[in-house]
Length: 205
Image (cartoon, rainbow, N blue to C red; front, side, top):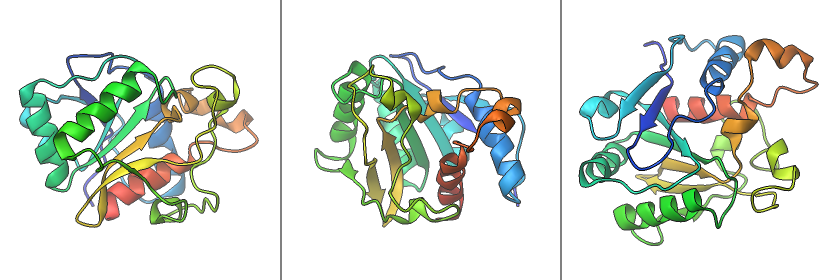
């Protein structure tokens, strides 16, 4: 099996380089819980370059505006429609924030206004490795009273040929998992397990 590489999407309009410790933390979890071989270094690919088409899994995040150039938009759409997987995470965890509004507007332009839909909490992404009977786990940042001060009990997705092509979260999992993996042992519960599900789903479906 080819080694998995955590691939982050760089786009020109916003701050794409958030939560720098998160990828290493998730890679540590893949090693700890699965037999998936991993590359230890995060890879950054520009959305305007064709390198994105070599990655089965990509991550896109930010706090600010998401407004793709024509080349970025064309690559994003072609990547997803050809079987690629994008995990997009709103660092503001705010449904009315700049990232959320602009990202959802981009998805509507590329895939149609109704393409991005809530997925049911019994979707297979919640059971493909670890079991999450109540759907997406709550992030601690949702409980801290900033952002939109809501706990989002759902994720959204764009489905392509029966499979998630874009998984979209307002829960700010990137911030939730942005800590040195060596500190995980001090936690009563490993909060990165859902990240393992996301990657396993992306690689096997």
